[in-house]
Amino acid sequence: MALPKIASKFSNAVQKTEQEQKIAELQIEVERLRTAQSPELENELQKLREQLQNQSGEVQVDLNLIDPNPNQPRQTITPELIQAKARLLKKHGQISAVILVRQNNGRYILLDGQLRTEGAKLLGWSTIRAVIVSMPKDLDQSALLTFLGFEDLNPLDKAEAVFKEVMKSANLPMDEVSTMLGTVIKRIERNGNSKELAKLMAVSVDQQQQGLELLEITGKEQSLLLVLLELGLNPSSVKANLMPMLYLPQDLKQVIRQHGLKGAHALALATLSAKALDISENQAASERIAATDEVLKKNLTVTETRELVRKIRIKYLKSNEQELKEVKIIFQKVNGISGDLLKKASSKQLHEMRSLFQQKLQEIDKVIATSK
Image (cartoon, rainbow, N blue to C red):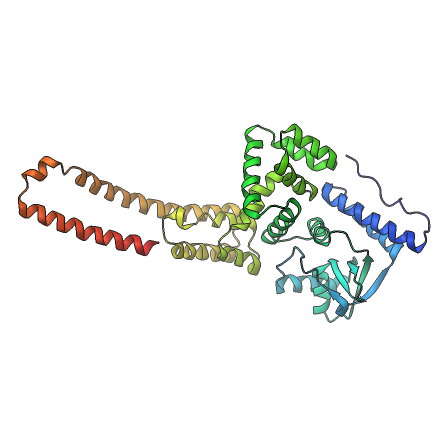
């Protein structure tokens, strides 16, 4: 589907009141383009920036007057990221203006350009080049769309931001969102309609709704998928790649935020769970931390990380299999103690056997208690 050319929309001079209306229209257009996820997106957004510059003008804004969006999707800003952006700003200057929203108190809310702003502060700049736009109706959604279009969010921040928007827009709690998304995607995949769902990302909202109805998706399920499609996200991909990020162990979340561990690596390492390895939570955490350190130090690929995880799991599975065989033999011997055999045993043997079993039961209870 060809995108409309927005550069030719405002060729004539307009009055101040008309300028504000045109800027608002351009902001709506950029959100639609981000949702479309088109290859032409960057070219069209560059034209948009040029139009914004022509209509409102780029201005130098005091960095001390800029407030971050408190609900911005990017919750992780490491010193390394800021240093990297500062180096680029120092070498190349500020290539593109940040986008600000004017507040009534004379200050501004940052809509796009968080890293550029932090990098400028690190360099000691007093001002930054900015474009001022009108307050969008939904600042949270506009910020999320901006980040989805421009910024390289880490997968955890992206997942948290996306599902926060989904819960708000669909008016559903997270546990219901998680269950419903898993259920509807599984049904779509079972019916062989995954490709049909993906095609809905490139059509209008009305066509998306019609398409979901053809797939027999209605009610809350339809509302949920429409929110994701509006954000330009494939619901199947969200279920497979983003939703699991929310349920990662805390140690992996911390490494993602502090050391930039990639999402695919984290998901592979997450399979080193207490349940999968049949060990305690503390032991599983120790295994994950050690494996994660190796992944980061050796800069392992996803494939190499999965191989590392496989070897660790095999080590525990073999150990567990050996233990199970030994226990199975004991089970067989105990089960072989028939009533007839007990009747033939002496009173002394029966008392010694009962005492032994009672002692072993106490030992088993202790092991079960310490493994919880």
